[in-house]
Image 1 (cartoon, rainbow, N blue to C red):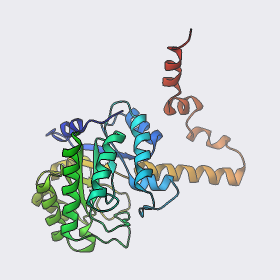
Image 2 (image 1 turned 135 degrees about the horizontal axis):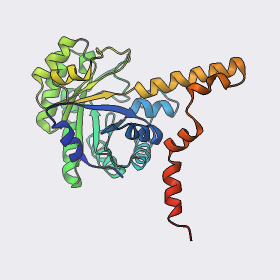
Image 3 (image 1 turned 30 degrees about the horizontal axis):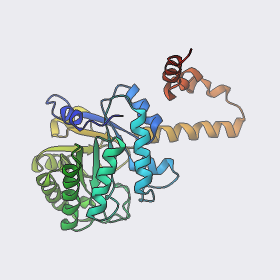
Image 4 (image 1 turned 135 degrees about the vertical axis):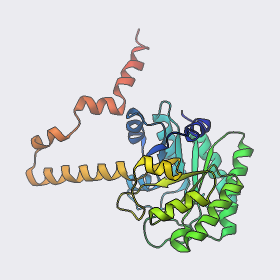
Length: 291
């Protein structure tokens, strides 16, 4: 079960390139990301909510997120996974429980944010953030939980204050998050290249960029983001968006025509499906125990 925070730190420390982080939301998507050759993945709260049939408005509980994390981590062979911890699911004591629970589930990193509960996707309307003091307490509690557990975990501190207050307020929060001991800061939803450049210039330490297709932040090439100063580049909705589009296309075709021959060329073969979900590994393991 992957759980290696140091592996993430080594990836972030490379001076020549940033880490591309496709986001997963279940065991299958985590497996596909690893099989595609990526070095790390991220359990997205948006995606976990979506596959449970809900919008990303914190309708999914702590226990449901931990259960998803366990399934994801157990499906991975070697790459580490970071988990979306939302607001920490309560006060500072809840934050500490969340951090320790995510470590036990096998996650190598956790992201915590400063939105008011119930939180929502950073690129949707209706966001609110807690006071600076409460935001800082959450990160301090996370840092304390890491120390008390005796086990390492990378902490990503996120602020949504750009949308609710100003870029200046969001930058100030990131600066303090970094001082408190967060490994990575994440200023959600900057609105221009100029804003992104300013974040990288004014906030010390490692930083994460969020590439949400059709969102409010410019989608930029990986080399440009690296040169700007981002070490971690997340793609939270790419796989989810691609799968929803493909499923809707297939369902429309089946509804209109009642059969699938014309779809065959665009579908994975049965052998490919079996390989991707793990039949080959299962059969190999099964053979070890034949008399």
